[in-house]
Image (cartoon, rainbow, N blue to C red; front, side, top):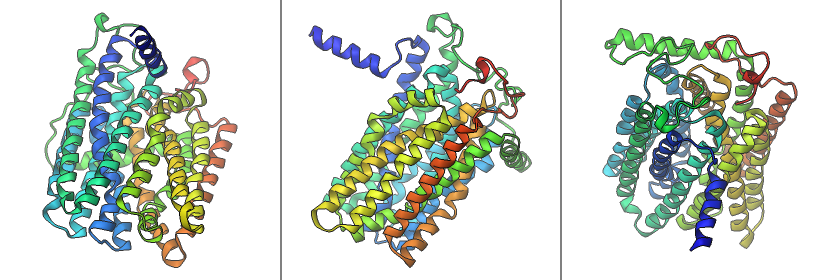
Length: 475
């Protein structure tokens, strides 16, 4: 028994920073529970392309449209970030969960692929809203030294449930694919619960203040709590309740102006986004290619695809985020992204090998490819979510995250068609090789940016950037 307790303490110290305050520990509980339920709905979305291809008999162009909807949903950030900036994020999170997760119960009303595309597109729109909102909550919940590692832990928990859902739904769909509507409805309900827990986490930020929670310690938070003077660039906290089309139009106009201003006035963030944009083209171009390759070229069944995309594709995202989070704290988001882009190039290269060989080697090579995918995306996911806090400094990070999301939508509006064009004029192998080239190019450009020293944040809207001292360090 004593040895078991020692082992438990050792594991806890390896996973959690030893100096967490009481406030951070209580907020982390809600965060991890939210990640657990969110992983279920993300796992169901992970199989949406295969369900569309295998169960609903969608055409290659419809699979391409699904990939397009997945990415273009993030373009919505261009319209809601102005409304969200400087306000509490919980109302946006709950509204998105109602409209984009509970509606999964409607999936089974029709077996028309177009109906499935509509509901999954709405679900990804809701996901984009929630992802944009959550960075502000994370920034205010944890101290700078803990953010990346604790967010990495939440990614591990979410991915563990993503894995269980992907594999479990794969088995269930093989057993009775006609009941897919029920499976997606249950997953959507779980995702709704996860969103409620994330919203409750924000409400807990004010409740867990004071010496009893250790919140009065120096450095507890890098920004004031939302509700007082939220962020230097956002002015005072703006309550909800400005009805009318005029207010809506003003918010949309503010959003467009804010995104343009951040890109114009922050050259380091603009360069970082350019490099990330190239990676995104490589990644999104493969979205319509991979399910067609797995189903038609390799002729894998649901169980094998679930093991590849679920077990192998998610194992790296379960085991590595806390470790990679600490590495990103040491390297900064630019050098970290360079390494992760280069490593992710192994994913299309191993899929190329699987497509070129015959017989028993195809499945092991596919598993290795998705293993590389999981590890690479574990690191890239951290950079995607947390780099906004690094570059924003004291600006509301949801504004910077919205820029990130908008550019995801921009590349998502054409990159799937690039993949579709490559498989129509050539083969999946051509798409994989093109993706590997772009990933290596993005890695080289990130490395050059780091060597040029062009990775310090400007924090548009937060006053002039720091020129030295501790304020100029990487987050």
